[in-house]
Amino acid sequence: MFNLTFPKYEFRLKKIEEKRFIFDEIRKKYIEFTPEEWVRQNCVKFLIDQKKYFSHLISIEKTIKLNGLTKRFDIIAYDIFGNVDLLVECKAPNIIIDQKSFDQIITYDKVINAKYLMLTNGIINYYCEVNKIDKKINFLKDIPVYK
Image (cartoon, rainbow, N blue to C red; front, side, top):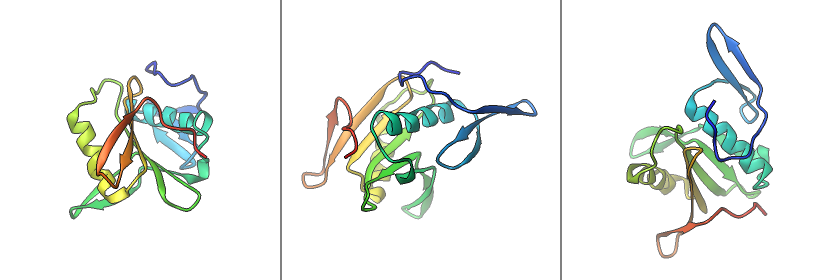
């Protein structure tokens, strides 16, 4: 396991035929343990425990249609009215977050229309607020606790 900058959380892990799996509390099943999945699961715990998002309002790895192509986002957290409050793009810890990473999440947001964006590799986290009126992205030190 990689050491991440998220708080330390407990996870249910298992091994089947030399493959490791981690239990996803949102999808209610074991998912193959990959570096990106490790970041995703830690991020979900962070959103629930520290940012107070309701687990039943979080969606993981669902598909969206983008310019005729099928894409898959990492994490979405909805508000109680069904609007997207937060869109999260997760990368493996060894992946450097660069302009291409930001372009990816901004492109996804054109369809998703989130209030906040988070881009993480588990080591470095970027937080943004999307200003729909001015069509600008404002970087934040942190995302606010869910209300």
